[in-house]
Structures are given as C-alpha cells and as structure tokens.
Length: 491
Image (cartoon, rainbow, N blue to C red):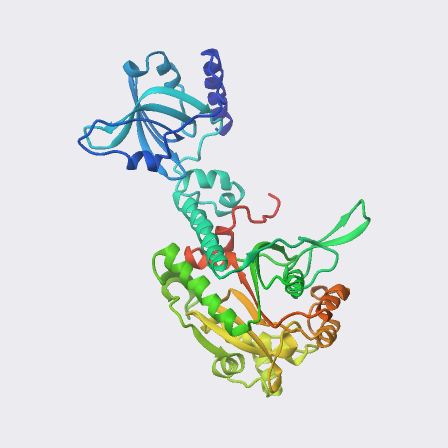
C-alpha cells in the first residue's frame, strides 16, 4: 500500500515539473512565523498582507475551493486556496498532498465561521513530500517507531515538539543562572587518553594517525578540575558523556551531563546552587514550583496503574543523612555490617566477595530510593565510595558528598572536592572488591595528580543529569522521550 501511495505522489511530482515548477524549491521570505502572523490580526480591521510557510497537515478540497492547515514550529494556521484568486497557480494547488511544504502570500482574515485564515493570492511549493504521514496518526502508537523516525514524530505530534522546545528552554535557563553567578562555560575533550571522573565502563576507539587507544569520556570532571588549578575559578560545561552500559527508562549510553565547579566553595554551596537551578527552572519554564509527575506503580495484586504526584521544588529541600536514611528505610545501621549483609541476603543480593561499602550501597538502592519522592539531598556518603571527595572533618569514614533525589530518581552528584594530591593518588590506585574492574581507571592519570600538586583551591563540584531533569519537568516516563535520537537496537 505504501509503495502505491509513494508512486501516486511521484506521479504528481512529474506533473508539477511539467508545469515548470521546481518541486524542491529554495528560499522563501516570510512575514513571520505562523504564531506571529496569527498574533498580528486585529478583528474588525482589514487584514494585512502576509507571507507564511509550513507543512500541510490538513487538506480539504471542494472543487474550486481548497482549505488546508499549515503547521510550523510555533503552531497552525488555516489557508484558503481559490481558483479565482490563484488563476494558473490553482493547477499546483490541486496537486498538493498532506506533508507538502508550501509558502503562501495573501490577506489575513476570517471565514464565516470566524476561523483565522490566509486567503492565498500566490502559492509556492517549497518541498513535495513523497511519503504520506501514517494513517490515523495520534503521536504514533508504536513507541519503537517513534524513536526511530523522530523526524515524523516531531512533524505531526505537537506534544513531542513541545517537550523538546521545553528541553531547550530548561538548558538555557540553567545556563543563564550560572552565567549570572559569574561562571564561565567551557569545553573539555570528549576523546580522552585516560578515562576517569566516574565509575563507568567507557567506549573505546582508536586514533589512526597517532596510533593510540582513546576513550569517549565518561565524565568531564578531571579536566574541569585542571581548569580550577589554572585559575578559572567558576566553570561549567554541558557535556555529552558516553557510558558503555545498559539501556533503561533512566539510562541511555549517550546523555547530557551538566558539571559545575566553584573555587572556594563546598558541597553546601552546591546544594544551594542545585536548588536554584532546579526550582528556578521549574518556575520559569513550567510556570510553577509545583510540577505534576505521573508514574506507573505496581499494586499488591501485581497489576500496574498510574499515579500522579505533585512534586514541590520549593526551597529549601530536605537534607537526609545517608546513614539516617539507611536506618529509617532499610532497618539497619551502616556500622553494623553483619546486619547489612543479612539484609542484602533477604533482598536476594549476592553480597559475597563485595566490599562492605558496596553491599551497604546496594541495600541503600534497594530499600531507600523508592521512598525519596519529594526533592531531597542525601548527604554524607561512606567515604570509600567517594574517591574524589573530601572527608567529613573529624569523621574520615564519611565523605562530604550528596546526591539530589526526586521521584525515587537520582538526578545528580556533588561534593566538596578532594585537593590533597597524596590522598587523591592513593584513592585512585585502590578499587573496592565487588566493583566491576572495567568501571575503574585502568591507568593512573598521573597528569591529574601533577596538576593537584601545583595547587587546586578548595572547591565544590556538581554534576546534574540534564535528561533526567527534563524528564521530571516535562512529565516524561522515559529518558528516550527527552533525547531526540536515543540509541536503538538495529531493526
């Protein structure tokens, strides 16, 4: 069927060429976007002459009169094509299809039903669509196909377009907050000879000319800290990072990470900055500090249902100590490792061969995260989980680290930075039993240690998963809904 429809459109294409018209036209000067044209109309006044362009999404032919609806990135507007007004150009109008892109020139006015309309006097074909949109399109029911053919999804699904317009606004708002605080936006290498800054498995590649193995970055952290050493006291980067790991509703192998470093600050400054970045963005982009989020929950009978929760991003967010959360929700104390391992066994976790801190964190993830619904900071993590972090003064077993949580989802990571080069080198050389050996640095980054020896100012560092924040602020169920082209298995 689709081949026949394509053949019909190609036949029309040839007829258009026979009229001496280029079916893949060039530049078209517009009066404005369709939204701007719509806003320019004043009732009871003679409509202005306008020039607009867009894709045909509705088409109704009534002999010598054709009504169509154009859509661009800003909205929709009806056009009226009449044989008397168009003359010879009406032959082109009769060859139009859904999906064609046209430019029109005419007077803006209202129909008898008060529908705002451009009454077209000149018609220009800008692109002949050779494939029709799917029948009975409602955002494309096949989710897999939506992700694979995002170009079609965006064309016809206004909700999808709005998500990505909002994503752009969220990133821009975050950028403006940081610039307003005196931070400088920088770029660091995506190709790195030594990967570091996180516990994750990298993608490996090879540079032919230099004949060297390289890694797609799992984090920009160690390079941004080098900039602190160099005297750039407030820096940030919206970094594309790559982790050769699983795919889920919260994970994509390529994603956007906002990393921020502030000299002479600490993790308390980063908490305050996180609150401003998220709460301020919610208010500016969503219009409220309270934003609804819908999730699926599984009942005791095994059936799933949706529940909508009003997430309140108002500051200050709750501060919850890691050990306190573990005791409150898992019923064990981090110091009682026997009890923690017993709990791990109850949860079906294979804790044998794992370091104590790894077992503790596995239990935390299983028992605590589901209860962290409203925005909060989990603070003061076990130190051995945090090799790049300064210790709590007077308690070296804990690190000055926090993770912000919303709707049971960790959306970032931050800490007071470790600046002692000797302690840092010792931490990086060790790895915890039970951690994946492929998720630790295979080679010590000697240059990073050298940089610390030149002296790095005390600092606070923050990483925020931009895609997860966009999920929350657009009420999207999956990270794939907020990434234009998520990684997909070959079809």
